Length: 336
Ligand code: 13P
Ligand code: SF4
Image (cartoon, rainbow, N blue to C red; front, side, top):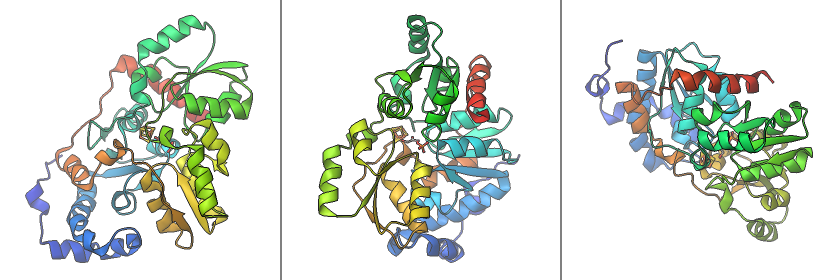
């Protein structure tokens, strides 16, 4: 495939602004007009590069609106991104999200080129546990099935029986039909699922650095300040935060909740870009904005996506000895 250079697609800013005007219409409620010229050139170039490369961009719900609404082909939570990764006939997949998401896409597409625009886009949960930790846990609890959250490295997935996401954790745990499971590495997700299922869960002390910051006190104060507000929380939040919310679910479940119930006023107890992205599609709902930024998700930017497509970097590779068992754990999840 020929290299596409920066110069080949460079053009006056006014042309890019004019060509991307319909996209700006879509996001004008969350991106000030003065910022658009900064984004227009990269957006226009990325749209051209996608065609040149036969590439698709998979973007997580925490990506900023100029990525999520203007260059992404598929958007969603971790489960949707994994499922959709199996459906594409593109040659190149760019994962606008964090590294474990790109690894999952690669596991499911071993013959495609999978790119992550910034290799440092990690995750505090994925960093909290190693494959060796899982091997030791298995020795401590022989015969107890190991369920790993997709927010883990491929090496950790390779040591597990099955994966889960926040969107299907309850279904996966109940589907195993056992009284006791090891569920790694998110302690809060494990406790939240244990409360819903009655299954005994052996967990790990991993936490999401974004969701662990929310407190039940904060939610009570919000309710006092804004009577009638609907509170939606991600299950990576501490159990007392989930208990104080009206609904807990994956990022896709939160977006669906707003889309289907159309609350007058809502707060999404999660990463900051979620509210922007959902607000674009729900103009009648007022979004309160206490939120926390994920520094890893925020490493992904339009210039880095453009660069990834221009240079076909950074390619995700997984050692076959790890990829085979890790893929099996992801595929078992998708089949359930
Ligand atoms: P979702 O699968 O719910 O999108 O969550 C992924 C994630 O990283 C949340 O912090
Ligand atoms: Fe990881 Fe939390 Fe960031 Fe999600 S929000 S990628 S769980 S650190």
